Image 1 (cartoon, one colour):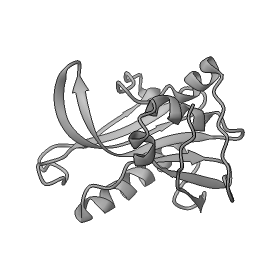
Image 2: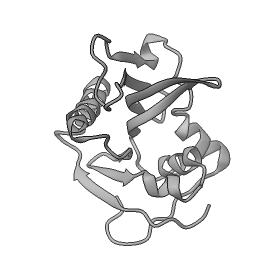
Image 3: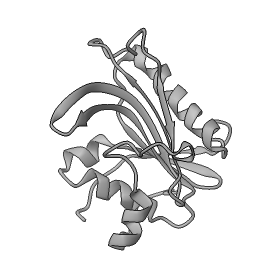
Image 4: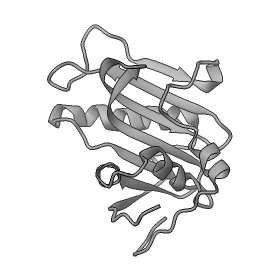
Length: 170
């Protein structure tokens, strides 16, 4: 994988990043929704360790032209990762058909559990009114949203590793 210059932020795990599945997903979702009135927020990757959250700005990875799914899976390869989440505005597709832009918070755990909240956006980038937020979870038997997750499995299968240089990395 090529070298990419990234900006990482770190935060204490609690209270914004609780350990319980639904509470963590809801907290990340609320972070995203609270930023929408100021415009479309930059997509971010959250790598969650027992005591801290590592927050990665995704646009530099996208701009580098690398496989963003493989790069995300590399973050899952770090020792001690308890969960990985991606939060932002994404274009959803079904095959070649574009379904629209959605605000999405997706969390995955190493054992394959996942949690996803999604809501379509209007043309101004705000939550579309009159539509319920779609909450799906692996524990309910729902199918995993296409194009998201399987990061831990991919990291193991491809033998991915991540080397972070610089100051505090996790």
